[in-house]
Image 1 (cartoon, rainbow, N blue to C red):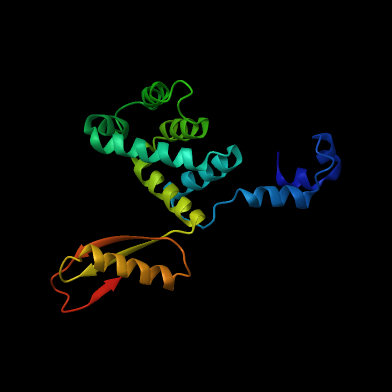
Image 2 (tube, rainbow, N blue to C red):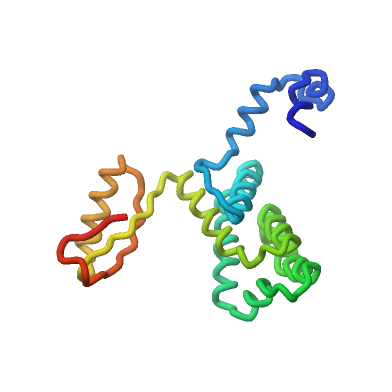
Length: 192
């Protein structure tokens, strides 16, 4: 149904949602929109998956499943190579994904995403889609990522102090840090 159809109040009543006005429908759609805007092909899949998972009430479960699928692709090189091999037909990939996600152990949203990616020959981007979806979920939870680069490795106490300082500066939001060592830094540290 096109957006123009939703503007026609008669057609809205025909849908059986006479108590819903256009404003309510827009508000409903806005409630399920991703918290930040991401761009690119993997982001399109992640955005659509976020919206579908939000409507289904399974945001966290879908995130877990996508990250698990990414981990399997990374650990099992043969499986990952098969899914990203352009000489394997789309039908064969769709069939393989259907078998991987058969049953009701996984969310329908996750299965639909992977089936769509297989049909569109985009399974090679599955890891990037999982990362983009995780970025959306971090934004929803109010989490921030930071990369701390120092000349020497930080101790646990130093990491804790830096994390607390970043949390205070971010207005109390949760901060997840990753540390890196770069001996070319003369002193102090950099925060990204």
